[in-house]
Image (cartoon, rainbow, N blue to C red):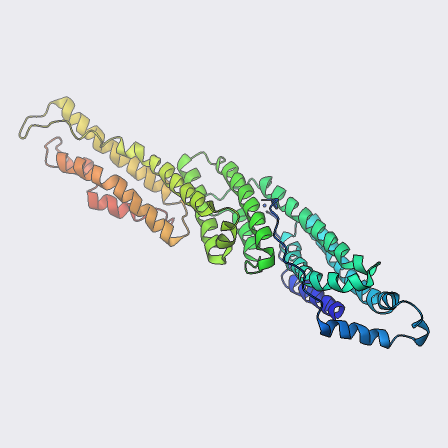
Length: 389
């Protein structure tokens, strides 16, 4: 029967939810207002109606004078629905306790429970048009209770992410624990549950919005602007990769079609901001278009200017390597892309500078100034983002 199936379904959902008791201490966007188009209710199956009638026939003979609707409601439906309601109230109570202790991973298991109730609702409504009364209100009331609990959990989750109190930042700019925890929660939502795809898409969009704001605010705690950019780059890249891998990106596109484009643009912007850290190195090698007559004798000030440029370049390059080798870029593909971008940005300009002055007798101690060939610079860049280098 439907009621027995309801109880069993709720128990299975409760058992599934209790399988992972991981607690999310950091978490966060809000369910939006788009409505999902409802499909017309199905007709009550003949098999289901026959089961109800068999129950009625087994009722006490003294009740045969009562209307069939009252027999169905009092002797068959209400006891079974009471069991379903108690199971649901237990889930709602557990959900509220999870919200109170910010155990969002478990409370979000109400998503499949609500889907289960929605699947029952069509047959339930059609059946209780026969019975009406208190029985007809049981399941809708339970659904409202669970939806209210879930909505509160989602609001608490969004607020928890937006106002995450953790001020400790990873020293190397790697993916923040808040990001990994939030994405773990999102990954646990099944994107293939069609009945909940619209709600899930809106929920994920709100969470990501709050997470983006929190990450921006956290990044400002770094004094080094390059490390700020690397931190945001790592986190945005991790979010986008997780969305793709989990299948959530396709779900969210039904609600926010530009989400992937937004993340790709954010990643590109952070790469550009990071590349600005090389400006202090390039500063010394950009003025290479000044004419230098072949064989012309250099003036003292010209020789000193060339020395200063090589000295400045060498010093800044070594300082950047000292600092940025400790930066973390955990994703291999992203790390290699950054190194490649650095080479494309630096090497052509430095090679032009180096080739122009390497053969010029501006010093009696060339090893002191011609310390790095273009190949040496390329090899040094390969050792960036590696604390063991």
